[in-house]
Amino acid sequence: MVKHGRAKKRRAGRTGRTKLKNGNYRIFRPATIKDPVIKAMWDQRRSPAANMETLGLRLSTGKDVLASSSKQSGECKAIELYDIPASDI
Image (cartoon, rainbow, N blue to C red):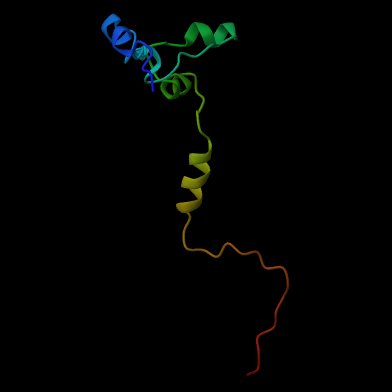
């Protein structure tokens, strides 16, 4: 097979190049906020979770539900629907 000028391309520096990625958004992408009140209070240097906490909001509400359900005491969670009489046996 013919190499079609591979050596010439290599000497010219046209092969083996990879574009280095810009690491601007490595941690998190800056938020695009449309609400003027929240935009005025938003701090770009802080994480979204920290900013939401300063606004009095929570980023993930599912954690609270799971934490509160696991903290309950050993009480029975079942609801009694019918009166079942005690057995004679």
